[in-house]
Length: 156
Image (cartoon, rainbow, N blue to C red):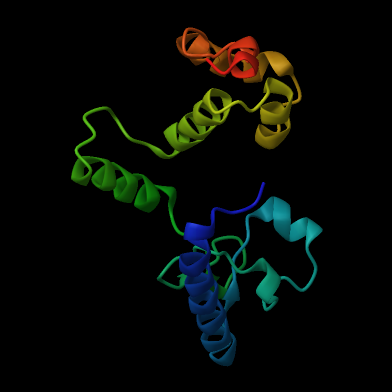
């Protein structure tokens, strides 16, 4: 799934910011802090730019599992939740706005624009089609708006 073109400049700017943060951290002897499960799989991760989080924490912290190791973890999920909630309020959205609702909205809009359920299943990474079929309840809203192919052939 390609990125929306409108997001590319902001994401490039974020990547540049993180690259500079990484270089500054490495110069000072700081690295990245990973969850324990990832540490066991990754080698030499601490000073590898590939492991730096795209949305890194603005503050350095001590790794609670490795004494004396100071580095950067990912941005806490509550920061994203608060920012999204505020954006919803600023936009005048009365319903609750939270990160997972973006996934639901994206999926629903894809179905309503004609994407088939199997393609949506692949995009969302669902192993079972029944999980994806949750989004079909909204497809019923568009049935009455669907034009007959015969109308197009006859020019109606």
